[in-house]
Image (cartoon, rainbow, N blue to C red):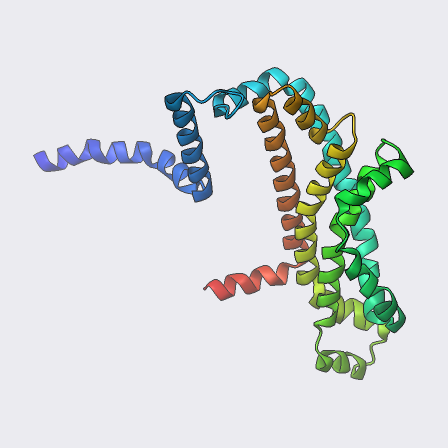
Length: 276
């Protein structure tokens, strides 16, 4: 009886801590790794007395968000608009161009090699030309985002559309499907995983393109804030802007991944069955 009464408080404590343990177990390992790195970073800066103009502490960067948020977030919205609008234009250009490359021998032989060759030109080199042609407004930044992000969309879309087997195409035609039905019912669904792989790669490049464009010439945006903060040796503000850029890229990527799960539900089922 005494032993049973002694285990009852232990069981009550276990029940009390069960929700907390469930929440802790639900936190991804990457989050714990990030927390550990931040704690190490904070401790190193304080123990080694690193000057803030060389490496600010995470708490100093957090303070920058609170004190300078009224400038960070409006400029983050400008950069986000450049990324989203440029990426959307790249998709509207890249996917139809990939379809034309697959279905047109002329475009495949006359245009596709030029698209591949154009990627050897550094976009930073042509950015000043774009500023000369379009001015310092939003247009040159959108163009640079498109130029950086549309290539992986085209390449992966072409690979996906070409990956449909000849047996599948012959089966579709033997069932009486015309060219449009063959594309819509067979080629496109088969190509969607490859297309989304290109889209997800293009999300990172679109963010890079927007920041590069703002470095070249801008009066607003996170890239502009990084340049201004660098000229004032305000490294904490630079880190705050960089964190905003990373958050934009992550949100954009995971949003696209959610869209992929909705558009290609059969791939998720295949992954689950494969894990099992």
